[in-house]
Amino acid sequence: MRTRLTWKQEKCLQNYFGGKRFCLLYKASVQKFSPQNLLCTCENQGPIMIVLYSENCVIGMYLQEGIREREVSITAFALQETGFSLCAIGTDSPDLLFHGSKTSGLCIRLDEKALTISPALRKMLRLPHHDVITSIEECEAFRCVELHSNLLQALRNYKPYGDLVQQTRILLLGPTGAGKSSFVNSVKSVFRGSITHQALVGCDENGISDKYRTYSIMSKDNSAPLPFVLCDSLGLGENAGLHTADVGHILKGHTPDRYQFDSMKPITPKHLNYIHDPLLKDRIHCVVFVFDINSFELLSCELVAKIKQIRRDLIKDGILHLALLTHVDSLDQITKEDLSDIYNYSPVKSKMYQKKTVPGKKHMIKITALWIKR
Ligand SMILES: Nc1nc2c(ncn2[C@@H]2O[C@H](COP(=O)(O)OP(=O)(O)O)[C@@H](O)[C@H]2O)c(=O)[nH]1
Ligand SMILES: [Mg+2]
Image (tube, rainbow, N blue to C red; front, side):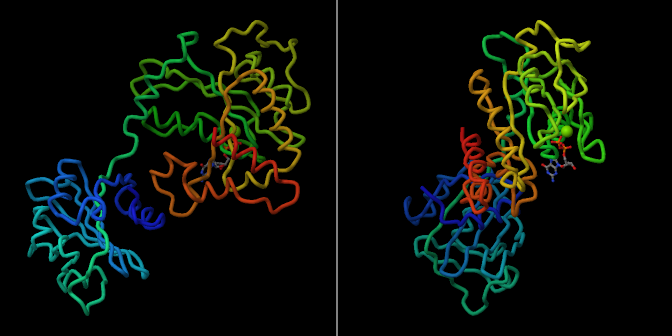
């Protein structure tokens, strides 16, 4: 079953109802225009949203406590070309919505494909006043679920393959200013439960932090570090920035924590703290390429070539690599749900697949899309 809500309408509703994910449970054209079918399907499923489609607008009800035998609080809303309107209409028994209730001013007569709305409620929802009865073309009901409440627990419980190492080492690579250090801080903050700024963000006038840093992530209770380490590096640049040879040393585990990069000279075995015989735990197990969503299609051909070379080396060494897009919060109408599935978010998808218009930048879009889809 597919919802009749447009992408924009769904985003708008998600934003109003606290970033929930909507799972379609009932669709009248499939499961009959029957109130009993709707009520039975949605009973005890948590928060429920009922959506009615008429010719000119979408009218709905959000039931925070869901469909139960007792009274629940109901919020009505309307989506019209002129915009979104919302109105809390108090508590009522959900089945009364289908049999007429004085409190709500609503009666969904599903069998007759009609909806009666009192003049007072019409006014609050900014609906046209002339007709009290609206004919319905479709009715859908959705379960509204909280997003990924168990994601953090899954990450805490993650175990690297075969117990070969205690922690998976993840290297963040990407252009300067992409948001590598900010990502480290965000992850640390989420697991600590308070804001932390351990990784320097845009630390000198060029926004560059030039030390190699490895960060263990601690849980709120400080019991044990999490099963992964984030490694933050100097940004990649066309001519300056992280030297390609340095990437090789980092991957193999030769580079010590706090190593001061020199973009002209990669580390050599002569360096005081060079790790000569790295163990499996010192090596990089996964690489994340970090890109700013607003500028990844503007990267220069030289930088693209550098990134492609690194990627070829990763493939040769069998190192898992993927892409992470940052600054997605700057996109229009982004919701919490989109953030959990960002690569299916329509504006991101269209950015990833947009046709090349600037000469010389063709491969970047293609390659980036390829990484992201892996
Ligand atoms: N709005 C927004 N700003 C970000 C995001 N990630 C990083 N930034 C900002 O981008 C700038 C560069 O970030 P930084 O972490 O130093 O980038 P790095 O050079 O890749 O380590 C800083 O001003 C950050 O606050 C993001 O996801 N959204
Ligand atoms: Mg940085």
